Image (cartoon, rainbow, N blue to C red; front, side):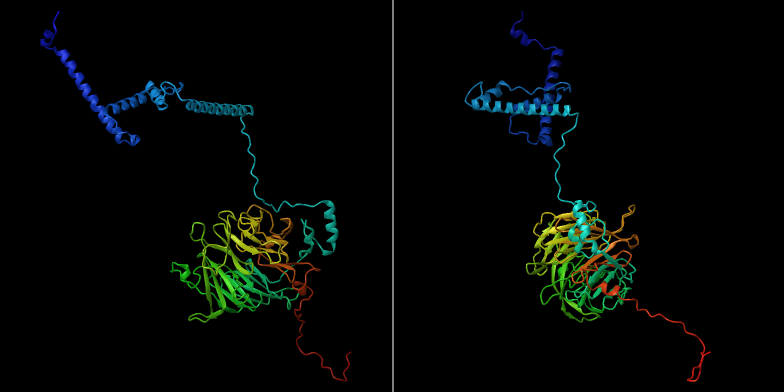
Length: 583
C-alpha cells in the first residue's frame, strides 16, 4: 500500500492529464458561454428589467432556471401544474407575519374567500354551458333597444269606421277628396282642386314665391329664367306676363319676395346674390370676394358660388338685410340701403355688415348647405344646415364662433340638407322642418336638442332645392314634395301632408308621371292656396272653392281674351246707295 507522499511523487498518466485538461477547458467554455448568455439577455429587449445588481452566483442560478424552464417538454394532453412553493419561500412568507411554517388568520381568511369566489364563478360558467347545450346551441336573444320614433309615410294611422264615415259626410261639400285622408282637420286644407298654369319652364322649377298681398307670383328654374305671374290680369290660360334672365344664362337656385313684397332676392351659381324690383330689374348685388385671400373674414364678399340666401330681418327695417352662405364656410350679412355704385360695376354693390365663420366640434371649417331665418324672443337668428350633419342656430352679428343652439347628427353621413323651414310665430311649438337627400323629412323642436321629434322616411329626394313648408297659420299641418322614383321603381311623385299634433301622415296626392318630381312647395296665408313646381317645368296650384280666395280663383272664371280673327274677302264688293235695292 502506497503512502500519501509516494502518491504525490508518482507522475500522472497522459490519460488522466488529458481528462483533467478537458474538464478545465469545458469549465472555462461553460463559464464563457454563461457570461455571454447573460450579457445577451441583459441587452435583449425581453429582459430589459434584468436585475444587474444581483451577484454573479444569483445571476447564474437565475439563468439556469430560465434555461431549464425553456427546455422543459410540454405536451398538449397534459395539464401543467403550477410550481409548488419551496421551503425558503414558505419561511419568508411566514416570517412576514412573525410565524414560522403557518400563515396568519387574516391571510387564511382572504385565501378562503378567494377560493370560494373562484369556485362560485366556475359553477356559474358550468350552469351557462349546460343551459346552452339544453337550448340546442342557441344563445339567448338580448332585449332589443327601442329606437327613437320613426314614421313611415306608407303606414297611416286609420281611424274607426264610424269616424271615417262622419268625416266623409262632413267633407262631402268640399268636392273630390284626395285618397288616404285620415285627419278630420284636413278638411280645412285647400287641397280639393288643382289647376295647371299655361306657361312652363324649360327646366325643373327650383323656387316658387308669392308676394305679401297675394297678387303676384314668381318662379325660378334651372333654365336660368325667372317668370312673373299676375293674378289680377291673367285669364283662364294663366300665362306668365314676363320672363327675365338675371344671371346671364346661369341657373336660378332660388327667388323669394321680401316681407313687404316690393323686392325680390335671387341667387344662382355665381358669387353674387341680386336684389330685383317687382318687374325683374336689378337694384343691387353683393360684392365678389378674392379667392386668393386665405382668411375669408378679410374678403369683401363670397369667392365661390352662393349656396343659399335669405332675408334677414334686423337693423334698420324689415326686409332690408339679407344673409348669404357659400362654399367657403362663412355667413355674410348685407345692407341693401347702403348699396352704392362701384367702378367697373353696372349694378350697385351692397355693404357687407358681418362675417360669421362656421366651425365643427374640432374647430375646423365646415360648409353650409341651406339657410333659414328664425325669430327667437324678439331677435332674429339664422338656422344653417352644415355638412357635418348638424343644424346650427347662430347670430351672425356676433363675433363668437359658438352657435346659440346646435342639433347634432340630424341627417345621415354623406347626405345634404336641401331646406330648413321655421314654424310660424303662432305655432304652439318652435319647430324646424329639415329636408335632406337621404329621402327623409325630420321635425326638430328647438326646446329639445338631443334628437328630432319625428322622422318621416321613404320620401325620395333627388333635387337640391326640394323644400318643406307649413300649410296653415297655426303650424298644425306641413307638407313636402317627393322626387320621381329612381331606376327600377314605378312610384310616381307626390305631395305628402303631415299633421303636427299626431305626427303622422294626413294624405298623399300623387301627380302624373309626365310631371316628374315635385321640386318646391309654397303656401300663402292670405290666398289659402298651395303653389308647387314640378320637374317638367310646370307650375300648379291646389285650392278649395269655399275656403280659398283670390289667386287662381280670379283667373279660372275669366274667359280667354284672345282675339278671334275673321276672314278678309279680297276685291271690292257691291256699292250700296240710298236708292239701291238688293235682288
